Image 1 (cartoon, rainbow, N blue to C red):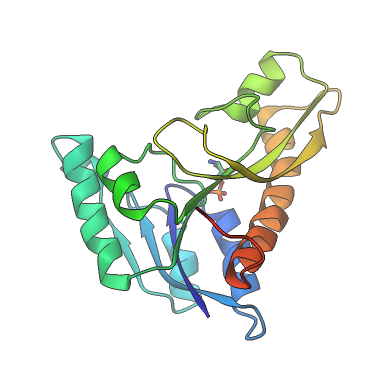
Image 2: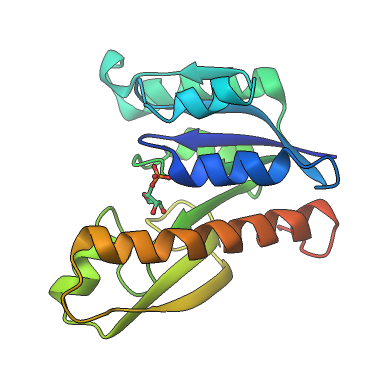
Amino acid sequence: MLNVAVLISGAGSNLRAFLEATDDPDFPARVVVVGADRDAEGLDHADHFEVPSFSVPYANFPTREAWGAELAEQLRVWNPDLIVLSGLMRLLPDNVVTEFAPRIINTHPAYLPEFPGAHGVRDALAAGATQTGASVIQVDGGVDTGPILAQERVAVEPGDTEETLHARIKPVERRLLIDVVRRIATGALVLD
Ligand code: GRF
C-alpha cells in the first residue's frame, strides 16, 4: 500500500477526487495526511474522509526556507512514500525538494512545458491558445520543469473564461493523477 501525503492551498477539489479514489480499498494507495500552506478550505475534505491534516501557514515564517523546514518536519512524521502537490500554490524550497525528491509529483492545469507557473489557465487564454491541457510531473528544483509523467490535451472553447476552462481541465488532472499514482503504487512507473 503506497502511503501518500497531499499538499494543497485552496478549495482542494482535486484533493477531494483523489480522496474518493483512494477510499476504495482496492486502490493500491491511501492518503495518510493532507497538509496546507494556509488555513485552506480544502482541509475540510481531509476531515470528511477522517484523514489527518496539518497547516503550516507560510505567513508565519520569515523565509521560504524556514517554512520549508517546518513543512519537512511535519511530512517526516508521516513518512510518506509519495508527496502529491494538488493545488499547492507555493514553490517548495530546495531543502524540501532535496529531502523528498524524487517522491514528489505535481498536477498542473496546462500542457507543459506550455504555460508553467501559477496562472497556467489564464496564460493559455491570454495567448489565444485553441487547446491547452493537464499535466502530472515529477517535482524538481524548477517551476513546473520536472519530468512529465502524464499529460493530455484539453480544448479551449470559444467564450471560455478562466473559470470555465479550468473547470474543463480539472477532471482531466484528477484522472491523470489517479492513474499516475496507481502506476507508481503498482511499480509500473518508477520515479528516479
Ligand atoms: C488545480 O488546477 C491545480 O493543478 C492548480 O490549482 C488548481 C487547484 O484546484 N495548481 P483545487 O484547489 O484542487 O480545487
